[in-house]
Length: 581
Image 1 (cartoon, rainbow, N blue to C red):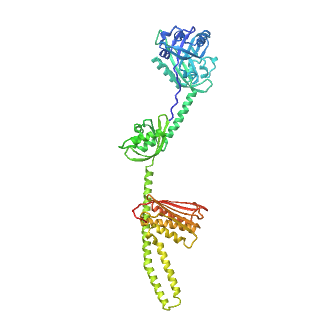
Image 2 (image 1 turned 120 degrees about the vertical axis):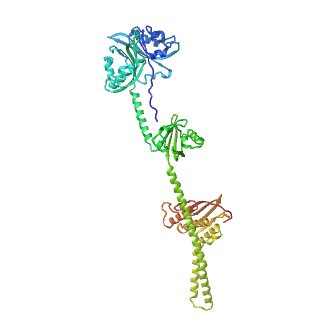
Image 3 (image 1 turned 180 degrees about the horizontal axis):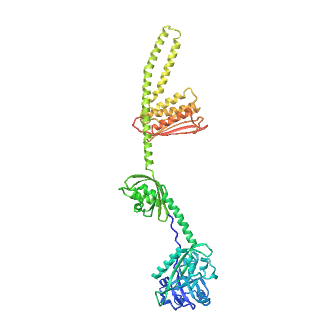
């Protein structure tokens, strides 16, 4: 999820001097940073202790002029020295304090900076300095305080009650409570408050403050001092970020798919409700696990660690894997993973496809059962056709042959004149019986698929202007009769379509066999047709060929273009048993 916004914060050093520039007070941040105590500083000029030979003469002169003339001075960059002599750089603002138009002293705010921070402090938001006595009758604001509160400098600082009221009842109570607690611990405090400014507009300020204690009576508070920073824009950015974070969190929590977030070590750092429901774990339990653990049940983690490393290498991974619910139930999960959606954060979106996969397997099994049933039905039908063909040939053919012989004998003995007509009719009947027998069971198949295809191409091209060329191998592995019969019928249907419907003049039948794979192609130069608009007998013929191919576990690819002919291709994987066909 998006990182929360963090504002830029610095710790200010506050120094209060009298009208001659002699130190009256320094805050805890100053003493902690420099090593100088209040006793070290009181009555002495800060510059005498802090500034060394490497001080910038122009900055020192500007600071001295401000003290002499009782004027404010802002943005001075100075090099100060700690008590142990080590230098440090500060940005300093000086503000004079007046009482009844009489200069009573100065309050300065010094901020330690590095080279990279130069110019950044004031860019982060306007910061003003304030001081007031314990009673609040004496108070002082630096020039930057007035724009923060949208107040005319000519009116002077807000009174203590006016200032506290700008924060509203709740804000006033929070500030008062924090000041009491900080004073009791002799520590500085820091608080963000919503403020109602002088022009009626709302804003936000960051107040840092500290109580001043009497040097003679260490437990008596004599005043308060501190700084106020305008953080209105920073709070607005933070609120926008929080709102965006809330929307993303709502999407995360309400997503229908399971979502897991993991760190670089592969440990879960967040999981949505869908993930908990899918895997059967509570969120607390998931946060003690890793996605790899959810994929493993008594097996090595190495394959899954490889998956994790591949994700880091490729930034994206997707696929299917097996995961385990808390109750031990195996799940088939479709996942999509994205690495480094944030530094050290990696996203996995999971979908439970167990039911879908089981349905797909069940459908595949049902389709296979249907093909097996269809194949058995076809085999039974072909056996019936073969038996019928034998009966027609053996019984009816023999009876007609005998009848023909009887008619021939009568004709030799000067029988009736119409015997010639009877003989012709009997011969036509014999031919019809032979054709029916061949249609029911091609005799050529008894010799093998290759001779049957050559014979069929020769017979279909006789008496027509269609040139049928065959390109067949010298031999084929031994094929089951059902396989040979199915291939024969596919070629027969393709040749019939090309001859009758396509008005083709040239047809090529090609059969190639390699590595127990049989590639079949029937190509013609006919008129072609639109694959989207085929219908009638041609559509039924195409459907029949495809159904026959499916019985052998193959698919037919039909390509046709109007005016450019048609091509029927199929690839069949054969179970060889030796011999030739």
